[in-house]
Image (cartoon, rainbow, N blue to C red; front, side):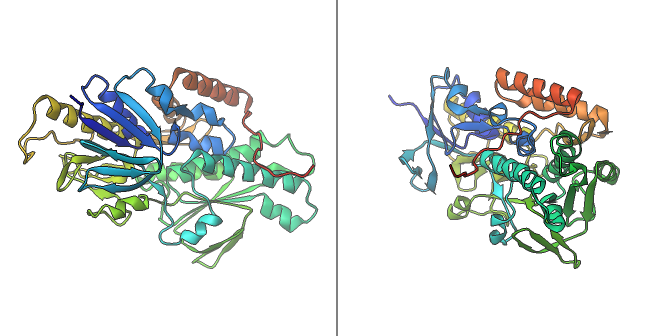
Length: 423
């Protein structure tokens, strides 16, 4: 007698937690992801700014489930999902399911200006992070060997678009890289003269926080040498140039987009309701209306929970959603529900708070009605991120890198790779 098939698309926080929660269930689990690793996305900016190496924030998916006998891992690209036929088409073949968990995550969104991607990469993958790190470090190398003052100025200018947590963290990390980490590495340029711009369309940074924390963030960044521009909209973005609607033009060698995300195109092909960003509108049990055997979890879900709260796109929320989908599946396997599914467990998001780091000993955090900033918030940020990292080796490696960087103000991941050279 074959076991019920649970198919999980995506090995992010939601997918991993769902599969782990079903480890003792009598099911046949298949996890599908186009990458072979689980990525700790909150620390991607540290790879992009040469603070951490790639292996320290990623863990092989097969290693995570090596001892979970009811789970197998397939490295495939999902090409189409047929909800009516209960079949998922992948680059390696078709997969049928009894339960489906869609946890594919989101990608960088350019608000309809997809042509900007070529000139302003986002930060959603290891490839994105290593590309940004390479281009940032190469710009300083070229500036060292440049005799044209205007070109050198452009090479030493970086623009980060988007004042959310990712944008704030990138801007702060790039400022520290230029003013502290690289300042003794070059002889012809003064890296402290590097210009870092942070551009945000909203009136304040970190709009999810109150005005006090937003103002603290702005002041901290400006003290670090970042030029913060709020209330500024991007009009045109071309290679090496950002034109703002307010009439200002910034010439920069490196432009990074951190202003928005959207769901992958496959969600719009499901034939179900989605929000403007392509996220799937789900019931309070995380299922798709009309398809109770299909759950959507993580950033790709537009979910209003049992308490009427819009679930945010944060890793703790994704983990809770993944575990919830697993609980519903397990409960139904033990005691099948009537076909109307009226008594299903409903999802309720437990808000543990949110935080963003700005730089060395500087961060902001909110937990319930409590607000933190400065060194205390920074310590909280360190502790929480170490806890969520997958694998003991990763935790130890990241802790040692952070300790070294804090004591010596140095970063050890400044290797440039992927550059074509001639013999």
